[in-house]
Image (tube, rainbow, N blue to C red; front, side, top):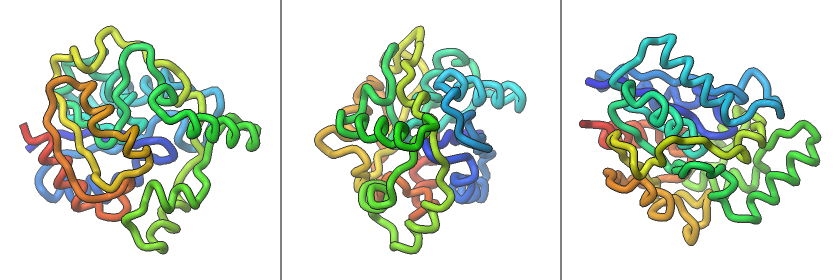
Length: 241
């Protein structure tokens, strides 16, 4: 059995990944779901990508975790890429779950459609606090399109405002993922349209990993809410050896 660390995406905290973790623990794995800086207890425009990375790095150190399968969802792909770059001795395998795969010097917004970037800046400006929230119609149709309305509404209520700076900051890597010696996997939810399929997660971003294991699973970007058990099985398949 293995040790997994699940790193959430934007607007989330580790708590939202607990149903996935519970299914994995039932299969005998040790699973941790830390929350990155900037995602609770409150959003701060001063929190950047480096702060988020440092917070999860500190968690791994404090828990003395080694030989881990490090899983990143969406924006969490930035964090796991940096951790593998800086602490490769702790990581057995990287698993990107519909996640951004950055090369050195890239930000999340560099990998997003320009109209999405403009929307995020407009939302942060309107709020005046440097943080972004997803409008519910976008959440419902593009992020959690495989769930019933009541599930989508309940999930939306637990989302957090997210610091825009973490999405616009450019990552600093000694080695881009394609050249990392750590084993890599990509979990692709086939109904995920949070990025348009013309600029989608797989293969546009997954192929930046070079050699990797692909696990495809039916579901939306937010399969952690709509079917956490199905997602747990996909993650375990991605991290099995």
